[in-house]
Image (tube, rainbow, N blue to C red; front, side, top):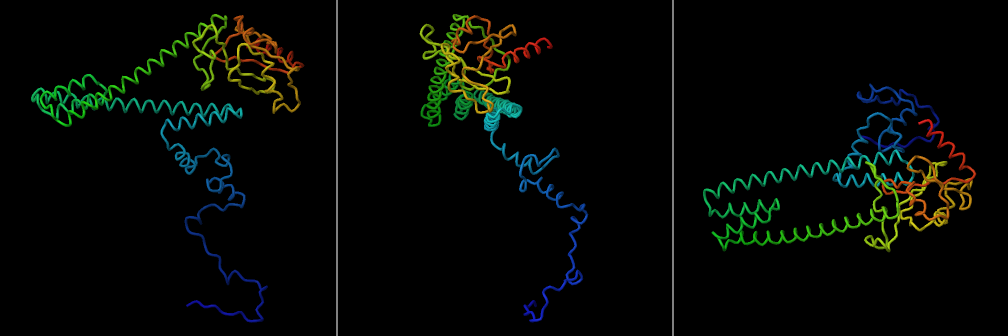
Length: 368
């Protein structure tokens, strides 16, 4: 039995304690075989665990099962939710100009969406196949027993499930000729009529929206043609969400509305850019420079409203100067500058360095 003893008054607490008096316990067998690590090596090893990790750089290039498990939990939602998450992360990276990271997240989002669509298509095909099997079985039963109420009901249900509304009503009406008071047949008859009404309303709404969009698109093409503005699309246009060429205020009023364009303003000497969501055709660059300048990253204050020049690339690959007071329409209407994927692009440079940049552009074009 353990007990507590009082130390004598002459006890010397400075006396050395020998290792024999207090032997060091040996390590468990599974740890004794591990190589001995220095303090720095032990700290580095601990940092590979998510609990002690201070940066994603601590993971290194080797596989880390714990981190993989955490990543799996991060992407535990549906593919559509994951795709939206990737898109938002891509937008965050784009806002801070981390283009490779943004591209990686956008690519992951697209892959997640494609996987979601494939899964939905497979599920839909499986459901259609199952309902067709039920339909064929019911028809076989009815060929032998035309008054079988269960076969009529299940046939109507199968046709309703694959949205064959007229066929479902016909099957239900056949059953009601034999069993006019059957509660289940009466109920599904009402359900078919209700869902058919909802479906017809939705179809009419979709058609109206599609017709309106087509009219707006045709009017926009006519507006560009009327102004002699050259445009083309590539195979991979950027996702600008709700930023696109518009006729405002009325997208169908060709004569009275004006065009607005998404415009990317590039600062090629500093690898920076600004995005203007709606640049009106009657507006000049000078009007926008008022709120864009001074630039937060321009430590040397090289960019000022009076000390900059703007250039656009022509269809032939040359450069055309855009006077700061000149309306955008004047630059685009000549047909020399091309609007690609619905975006106007312009380069802004300090006036004192514009010639240097132009020479560099010409040199690159000559080389390649």
